[in-house]
Length: 53
Figure 1: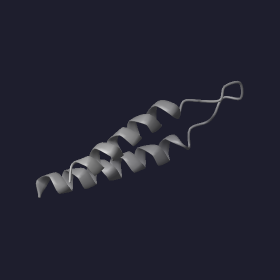
Figure 2: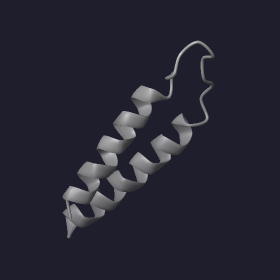
Figure 3: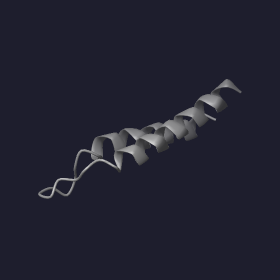
Figure 4: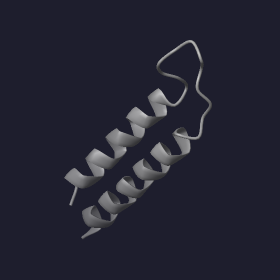
């Protein structure tokens, strides 16, 4: 049961990280910007959270 709550916490943390990262400004000369790495980390958090329960 403890893993279930930890999984839910990881999914929520991942979603919040992705939403927050999408608010970062983009650079006009690049197709990616400062939101790329936090979005990848947030996706990893959410996927690990779905794996735990």
